[in-house]
Image 1 (cartoon, helix red, strand yellow):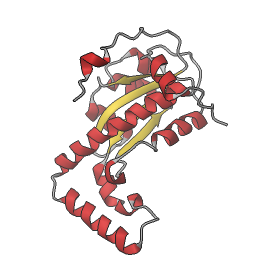
Image 2 (cartoon, rainbow, N blue to C red):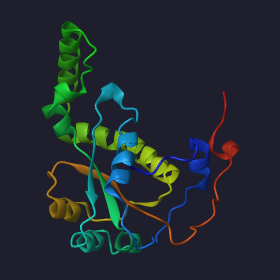
Image 3 (cartoon, rainbow, N blue to C red):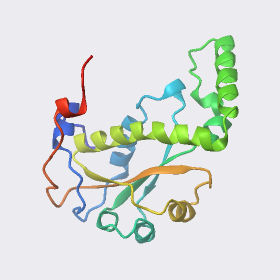
Image 4 (spheres, one colour):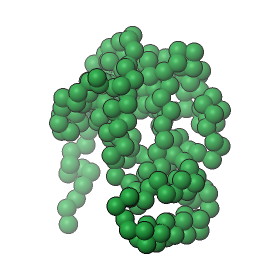
Length: 204
């Protein structure tokens, strides 16, 4: 049975820190699956859901992933690392999967035709850029879902994408928004030092 979520969204946001040192114990697969189940609920334009994950747990693979991630210590320390990647070609190739079964056949056919026309009018690079941006929504959900279940995380943007793709056998066209180390924290992390709402927003 997976660990329960024990925090509100507000509590998870308040308590989350980027933690780079983890207790040396395994993260159960059922917990990782539950986090990803919650991530799967993230909003997505036209329900395209372009995010995909490789969950790296193999102790023989983790050091190789760390080398591709500039040997950052959180990848060495964590017993699990999410590799978040976006793959718009997979979305197009399995377009029927994103059509709601609640649609009438004529509705489903019309939506499918509209989406394919829109996507295929773009270059592969353009639609991949779109998918890449959307995938950051899933990243935010993942960080809060993990925190609420008692896990600490550290999202990484510093890595060699081509090395990560080669290591994990990912298609050449995909892009990788982030790697996310996860585990039970073995350090407190830095306290929040953030802009005020008035610094980042104005109301009109």
